[in-house]
Image 1 (cartoon, rainbow over the protein chains, first blue to last red):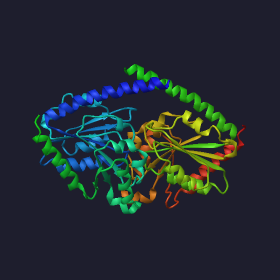
Image 2 (image 1 turned 180 degrees about the vertical axis):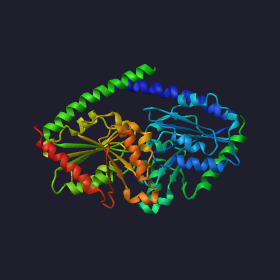
Image 3 (image 1 turned 90 degrees about the horizontal axis):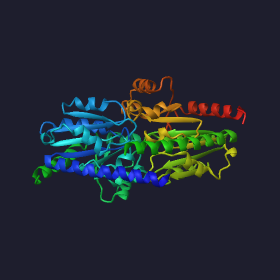
Length: 224
Length: 224
């Protein structure tokens, strides 16, 4: 049975890559900067996004898509920012894929947006394999999870463009070893850009927003 | 393509259930109590297991199997207890299955053990669907992850026999809402047994060990 499983999986991934390519072209043509947030459950994706939407909104047009197996709690939370937010519930599927995104975005006017944030399903394994056509894939690692996670889930950290170390306000309480975490992140992905932040205290948020802002400027300047 | 994927997945699960039934019979015949620990990455499975092995060893014969995508860090950590520990590395697979367990246990004398602990891959989705022949499936929910996780990952909480709320020494620092977490756990699984513990301070560990001890007694008394 093993060869057949592999064959089907390759079929799924190939189809996803084709759809993702189409999404990427659509995002570029619309001039929208798309950011895919991935992490384990509870690493703080929603809290980061709440704070990001709130701080970006005065100067930028923002929206979000949120993936979860069940509930629309996160869409409700993020919707309070006033930004357009849509929930994708995946049932038993442990990641978002390009087809789910295409369906959710079918009736959206992307040209009316500067930023679209995708909050993936909380999972350090499955989302690694699914390109969503995003411009930036950011992986979150909270200080409460342990410094060893990059070594234990190398694929998702290796495939990310940027790592956000989150909940740094709790670093002392949990005995977080910052040097060890940085070493492990860069062992898996040499030269990986790392931002350390806390959605609760706001530490590091200006660095994160500066990074996003610079990316949007480049998107706006590039020929459509 | 969708029907074919479902067909293959059902084939995999059916095969797993048959192998798990064989494992369960083998565990019962050997009189070993098998506990499967599942949770998101960084919820504290390894720390709980370190402390559990240390406290059980004076009176019980214990061993552990540890699943991770990569590294044998956890096996090394747990091996310091002196207990037999074996690492299963799954590559890109987001759960342990009964076949991996059968292979890892092929040359073990299970009758020489009172307890076998399985530390599953850190994932709140995939391990839910794979019976490993265990006697008890315990799901960990750390106070740092957020009270909403049972609602967002209902399958794994619904399929567990017991929930362990971990890292309770951090409850105040993270503003953990205990009543909300208990409400959500029991909304997904009415009557679910819950133990609150901290591997760091030892709080709740005696309750957990008492629960394990009572289970081992029942195993020893049941006709083989």
